[in-house]
Length: 127
Length: 348
Image (cartoon, rainbow over all chains, first blue to last red; front, top):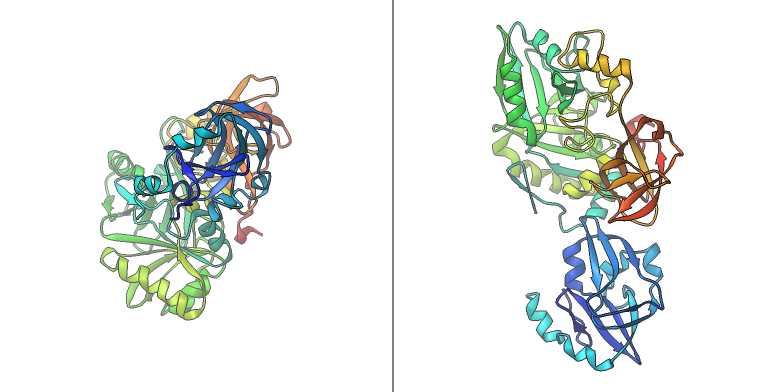
């Protein structure tokens, strides 16, 4: 399983990666592998303001449904609509085409509270 | 891996559940189903005994045929579903893993003079070979071609030196069969079939429990504990066709009473939008009144639908009826649809 070195990670396996003034959020390669084949993704709408730890969507695999949690507080600036037609993008390319939402963070410094790639890799037993 | 009836079983192999499903629909899937139980019933009174125990007609079941049936209690509720094979000197009964002990106890408690019941489960292994190219693969490796058996027929053959009882049946909606053979040959035969698939250019892979469930669900086959159970009578579940009311069988009187008053609920298929329905989710009418519950639900890869099976009030069990499924508390649009979602290959 791969870990995106440019991203930071939540305990609940979401990644958050700064891109210009937004933060791209999805789930890690480890998380998608644990979930198995993903068959449905429901995300809150763009414009929605959420606190860190609140649910921004639900992901359903062949096995079960799981909630997705905001890795930091902010408003949803953009939602990846292509996941509606092809949720398996999250399995195939979790860090690129399988991104889920872009957040306009309340405070860009909140990113620093998340795990660095190296710490996350050791948490999930990579390396 | 998942624990199931004392077995550790793979939910999916590294291939992944969706691809395993697709592969079974296009080529050949191998299913390790040793967890199934097998009983052999013999003796001068065996036919009369089996006939009374199971719901289906067996008086016209000749060698070399088998038939699907239900095992009912006195209330007409479903203790298990099973296959009855007519062998030359005995009856071969194939039951579900989780009910093996209770089924055996049920058969033994009702046994009559002149009947011997043997549990053959521990010495018998079972592999299912399913898919549009399954028969081609098996014919190529068997000493006597399995294609000699018609649907629900059986034959004896040998594969890689292993004696096989082959039944042309399955749980996927595809052609193929189930192999019964001595347990010590299990690993050999499993690897032999996978290797022969490669050698013959017939794509053949191992299939896990998740795909086994989605394949059977699409094809409209019940899973005990879901569409059928000891708290669901055979008529509510839609299994009148598997009951022979012209003979005597356990549960018949109760089912006749159900038929006379009309069923309390009916099993329907639901096509759900905007979420994945799952077992246990409530079904409501468009006004929000709860009218039933999902007994199974999932993404169906071949028909590309999110679908459920649910028991609902009979007046709502009409295809085209708009209902709601409460997906994690949120009402999602659902439409009653005709089952099965996927017409089995051998019925087209």
